[in-house]
Length: 366
Image (cartoon, rainbow, N blue to C red):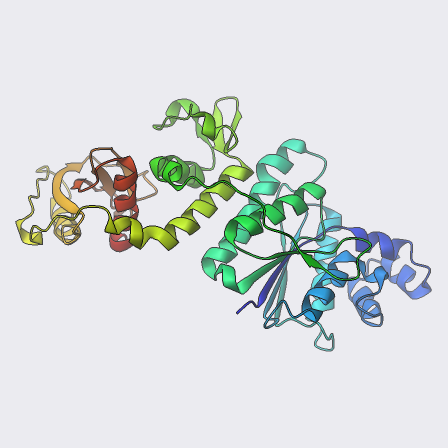
């Protein structure tokens, strides 16, 4: 049931108020009295051009019945004073219970780096944060609960919001300046190579976790030409680009839908769990590692525990490394000591091994 609307936000409403010939609006605008301005706007029809693109488009979305309920309204504003002012004003407007377009919960979020005085920040921070905010909502709730209103904001922001919606399976609405009602943007072809994502799963995991990493410190190959549009390079640092973040989110979403089917084609080991070989180093943490090894051996995709790993307390995610021949290095990150084991799985190639690694992480991480 679609009940959440995420809106990109521009500043056209502020310009409308600035040049409005209504004396009361002029006075409130000069005083930056956003509460009073929101009340004055409520006296106007929500289709009045003075109310701006955001209010006009939300009115149209609600009028056309694109939302089953008006539970949550989230405004994504620019990292500027005007952006924050817009967020505050729109929140006040839609928070009022006497507003016929009232939502149960209204909030605005500043997209750090989304500003027009720094191309680098806009590209490397602003657009990435746009992807992250929307994808977080999708992971927390579901694509079926969310719609995107991409009417307001920078042109690049509007375009990218549309791409995000299409990639994550969310309807995207837009109100053209001379139109009286919103339209749903048509689907855009967005390439998805799930095998490429699976083969490079740990690279995406590393860059997502670390944000940026020294190229010389990365343990994964980054010279594949397919990666050129998915990563940003600056000096000796590499990070996911906005498109890389979107590709990662879309792939994760699609993998979740297909995971059971993918696991079904991977061979299983029918050896009884207590008969599987467990070989550990005779040093610190052996009791903890033995207990975990016995637990993880219950998985039909685990053949044996090859060895324990040296301390690695800086490891942030359970899967440290994987190898095409089925080896998964699994770190017990929740121990604060970085205990780890080397698992021989039934994976026959890197994609299968990484699929098993994700499954083990989901099943056995605490």
